Length: 227
Ligand SMILES: *Cc1c(COP(=O)(O)O)cnc(C)c1O
Image (cartoon, rainbow, N blue to C red; front, side, top):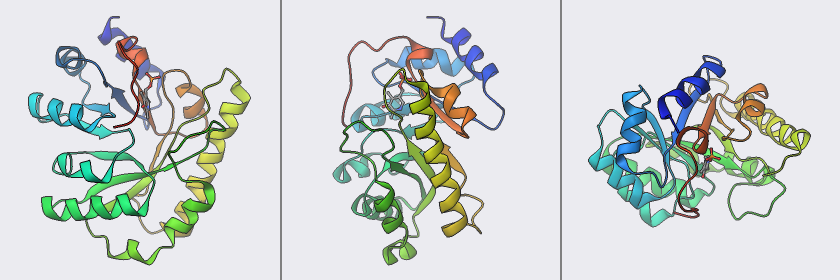
């Protein structure tokens, strides 16, 4: 895999308003540095320990995205540096992020993860849960988090029409929520959807942040789940 070529190809295919998060989970530091030297600055990881270690060792102008499921008791290890937490799916977790943000004296940007795929998954808010979440009074007092938008993963299927309709659903939710709850807040503006296999579809349905791993770095040596 020539990382620089892959990055250039992907970037050339993305509209200017779409941010590329290079998903570097499982890959060693020197591979990340190859992408870094090619100009890439936003990287995504899904395990707290791996993320914190890479942050410590690698250049400090890298923007680190936490894209995986995050356990409340691990927020403290990333609160002082994380650029964006993509997978917030409970009020309990957001409260902890707020508390750790206060300790680190920074406001932590978050996305709410919505469950759009038909596959079973423990992660992500349902549509109903999402709307319940957004009217919770507790949100008003959380001064150290900022909800920047939504994140979702489509079904892992070759059925393009299905994937497209799931992305479309998430974009519709994003637009509704923006006009209902964040109409005045120009910073509610991030819609994170699309991975190696489906990012073109996601972009055509309105994504402005894609999370791409294997198409840049090749296949991962071992599968990963959880945090
Ligand atoms: C691993 C992962 C990706 C990237 O997957 P690829 O298919 O390798 O592009 C994107 N989003 C999340 C949440 C991931 O865990």
